[in-house]
Image 1 (cartoon, rainbow, N blue to C red):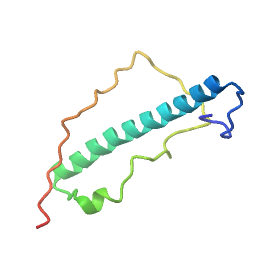
Image 2 (cartoon, rainbow, N blue to C red):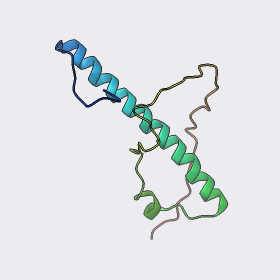
Image 3 (spheres, rainbow, N blue to C red):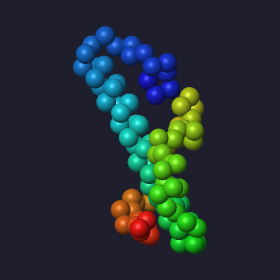
Image 4 (cartoon, rainbow, N blue to C red):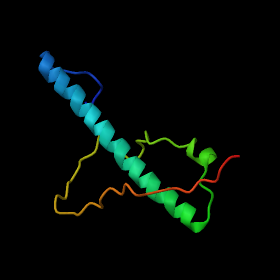
Length: 97
């Protein structure tokens, strides 16, 4: 379904559930990748002195998929090291009051 027309071709309930779960998994992985990438870039901007405040953040969404080639071929390099998730990215916000 990732690159298809959105129709589940299987007529077995457990196969349909599998397709739905896999689709949700792919969507969640894309969102996680986007949140981590956006957080790193926003922290870089903040470290440079650019304002990263609620006004900037409310215009952003991790549900971006323009960078995903849904109909393309994917070559996976399983030897490539992936940067670890960084849960310590912390933003400094000034009080609104």
